[in-house]
Length: 476
Ligand SMILES: Cc1cc2nc3c(=O)[nH]c(=O)nc-3n(C[C@H](O)[C@H](O)[C@H](O)COP(=O)(O)OP(=O)(O)OC[C@H]3O[C@@H](n4cnc5c(N)ncnc54)[C@H](O)[C@@H]3O)c2cc1C
Ligand code: SF4
Image (tube, rainbow, N blue to C red; front, side):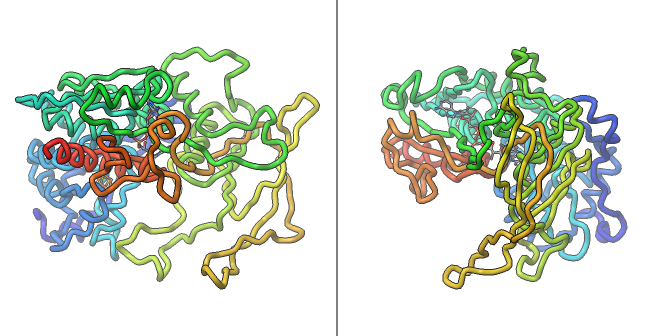
């Protein structure tokens, strides 16, 4: 720890952002990093608390106090070395992680926590600038060949680790782009695709092979893959979106959020979309169903496209503004959060159940009908809140576009999982034992496919753990 009373002297300072009218003109990232001195002051706020809860708050166990101190002492390269011991891709997490570490920071008990995430991204960006991020292929190869299916953060971290162990790794991806949701899903304004490509480029130089446009279970069977490789790791994500089962769901103008977001990612990459297939919110009244991150990404995208109005409706009640007694520090705070997309303009409402969608004579969406719901009573047997419609609270709103962002129900079963005869857990995710091996010997699984829809940082953790599992099994 550098400055003994740093946390008393320096206030928490986060990255600044471009003004809203400026940033919604395009899909570029819009944060303005801190200066070296400002960052040093932020590092100095880390207070050597003795039991750094931030470690356990971070799913990959980043050794946060060490790099805070090294930044304070201007020892950037050592901070970079320390960071890379636990995180394969700090340039992703430093941009888009919701930073559970900051919720667990001891300073955050009664002061604003340390700006861990901002420090993380500044360390890795400095490392790239200084040329410290050099390809480091393994010195020796084991002769073992491993296939990783899926190039999202779990597949990439798994491939990166396995390659470091000296195995020859090939990543199979069904899309034309590598990166999973980092590339096709998460908007460019949150994570520039150049950042993803920069990392992929380095991994290729280190010896990882990538094959795009190959859907395992369709173009190539899991059996073939197993015959060809010593081990296979499935990192196919949780791709089944929750559906809206109401009349009018098939009207023109109602889309799954992922149809919308992935199309905009492709357009940003220069892909031409036929006009009748283009989903464009320009001048339209937009309603997003679902109050989570995916919904928030639809809000930001609709505002960039020039929507006339954007509303976001959530079924669950509005979360509290502050932690409640049953959700104490250092737990993840279950409070209402506003994303940068929310700052850009949206009307948010909670406890709303959509009942019906209606359209015009051409089959285009025109109206959403809904009712308010109450969760204040609990099921006496389970103790869980019970949803009750509030009589007389029905209402409707005009809309031209509805985006469904109501969560994901696990991995697609047809193809790879069914053909492989893989066992599933009670939530419909791929079941594994402690070493991440599925019910089939030599086939492993990691990331959202195993865990259910989660976070990039958890996907990285899963990929790393599965790589350990594979490595241990190969040595037997
Ligand atoms: C819109 C959106 C925004 C999000 N924003 C954030 C955020 O800001 N911060 C955060 O931490 N998390 C966010 N998440 C969650 C995060 O992106 C995921 O938890 C994470 O990407 C999961 O990583 P993964 O590698 O397991 O799966 P994915 O990223 O889903 O990657 C799976 C890959 O496998 C490929 N694949 C699937 N089946 C096959 C097959 N049979 N053959 C070949 N390839 C296959 C897919 O095409 C895909 O590329 C967001 C999620 C969404 C949907
Ligand atoms: S990866 Fe996420 S939780 Fe871990 S230190 Fe970075 S911001 Fe915090």
